[in-house]
Image (cartoon, rainbow, N blue to C red; front, side):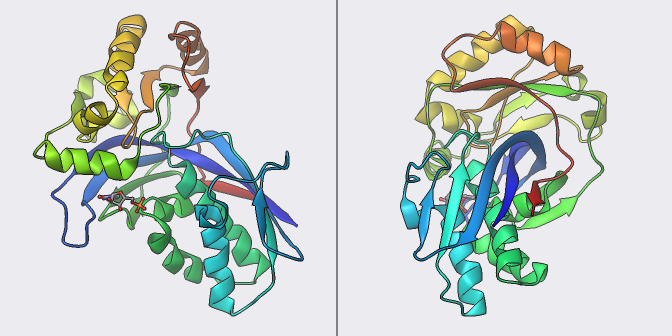
Length: 283
Ligand code: C5P
């Protein structure tokens, strides 16, 4: 049995370009792993199963991205060994925190150990599983471009914590990208460099171009952002295609105080620290 933790990501800015012929949009932004993690366990079994440690079967069964990642590694080595995958979720679904991609990345790593596959093979399998999987396989702090497959590690960011709030709506990434096309590719929500922690300022202002499209799909996102900005007295940014929202705070204590005054009813509201890694395996 091999198990491990898969960390969520937040986007410090996400610039988006016109839809490419392959259906994907070019993106550019800083991706950051954070200390909010799902847990995945893999063991040999009599038949393939995927569920939670509480016994519940996981949504979508064998279409689950983590299961697909395991199956891709197994297929690569030509094995027919059935496996049991256990996935305990802490990262909210469809929230812009990359939970499905993080699960797929840890599944690649764990299946790689289980089936004895070289890490280079895992890196090649990652992009076909999902646009954010290559980043999740790398983890830490990185500049991400292309459709997500170009991942360049950059110096770790430090000196701040995040107040993270997931409003009570689920948002589908393909729907948000389609709305962005329909809205004629609007420019996004901005935080000027002067409103950012010092370690982020050199990258200039922070812009998430998907904000107007996320609000078009889920109008509650704008209500939550405005309310958080007023309670926290600072700019609040969207992660990915949303609906996750975050603000920058000096340290964990300040972020916890902010979470204490956030509106009730969020899917998740937590003070979050940055992580220097994207996953951790414990044999
Ligand atoms: O790669 P992933 O499965 O996460 O993408 C889901 C959908 O989101 C894609 O089919 C596409 O519609 C949209 N997408 C996009 N551009 C990206 C990433 C995702 O248009 N860079």
